[in-house]
Length: 139
Image 1 (tube, rainbow, N blue to C red):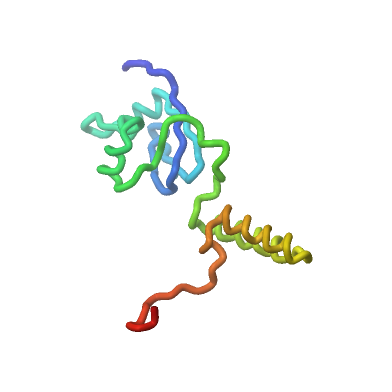
Image 2 (cartoon, rainbow, N blue to C red):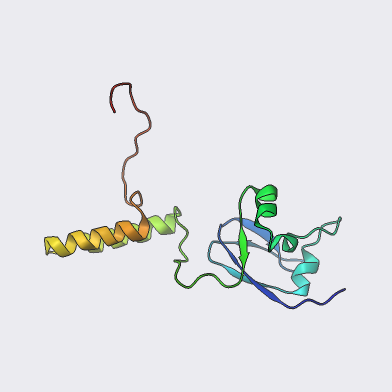
């Protein structure tokens, strides 16, 4: 077996289940980091010798295999929230920030805080309704 340097990766989508030892798997979540060791490389090889580790620096191959990019090399970016956009945790954080911004008494400061919530979480994070259909002539 060839020994390789451990390599740090970070996950940009939740839900990929990976073998991390001969007997253990882990479901990776958005924002997680994993150091790929020789043990992980060996445990992840299938009967044909193929491993998810082979796709580390090949985003097009990840898209071909899974339909999206799941991981990238290096640590998770420090300037990016580790709360996955669109997740329940993201919506809860957005609503908490919205409540706090809405409680500001000064209307100018409140509007600025609400705009910051929208900038950080997106315009739909605290939406309570969704248009499911549009009728002819209604636009």
